[in-house]
Length: 391
Image (cartoon, rainbow, N blue to C red):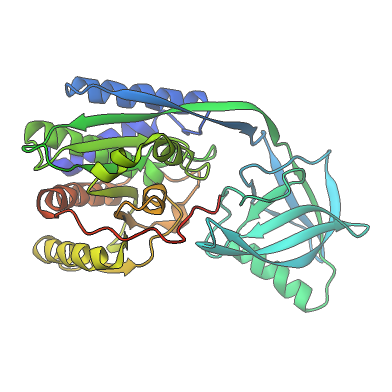
């Protein structure tokens, strides 16, 4: 079976397990799936528990506009949202901009008001359909926070700008309590030399509402295929592969790994390669730091694409985004890179299902990562002055 076909087959097997939300039976089933695949390759798998405060999204959420027209909006609770007491009838007013993932995303925000008191918030996505995200630290978790889509947010803004009163009926059944537990899974593959080392990683958890083929079943399967390739032909240097859990919970899995690591552990890493979101299409985004390292890596990626995929569009963004697992390492001073084929209309959606476009990009990314690990030398480090994770 060729790499593309194998990627699609394995992705389907993973996605058939259902949503992989931290602290649920779905993530436990995925943990067992990955452990079984890795053990079958002859690898010893280390599991490390990641514990967070528990949260449950509840069975249903509702946002219905009742004036100036009647329309029910697609909505999802934001992670750590509070619950409503039954259904709330309120009016909306503009409430500025909502920064998410340390302002990596900026959404319009509306306050739902009853008798002058804010009783809930609506968060209108900057592009695409409604999609849940984790609330930033400091949010009022005692009230509902509900995500809606960009078009619905634009319509609400237009009504308010025209002087209409916008009335809504809303509810959320979220619940805080207990603990959510799942595991980071790590394997180590010896290199042809024992000098240095690279961490290659990605998260395997999802939000509760999605089977997560693109985000991030794609990166998960790429890691499995890399493990298989390196077991057949060892890499130039030792490689640690980590499947992170709880990425959607403000990087709880990768932050716990960094917190447990000593300065010596981190210094042994030459760099980190993170794979998150290998969706459809021919547009590759790379996020790399430090800046001098960015230049080197982008040159290598462009050279690889030139010989394998001439139509690929590549854009590099510096500094690296806070929104995925390389960020915890970059904040600790470890040179890091993140690769994604963004497929934002499938992000945190029930229809994020396997397709051949995802499989094609997994199959292309695997040899790219092998090439980088084989040829990319340890970069100079720059002090992590002022870099910190804002959550």
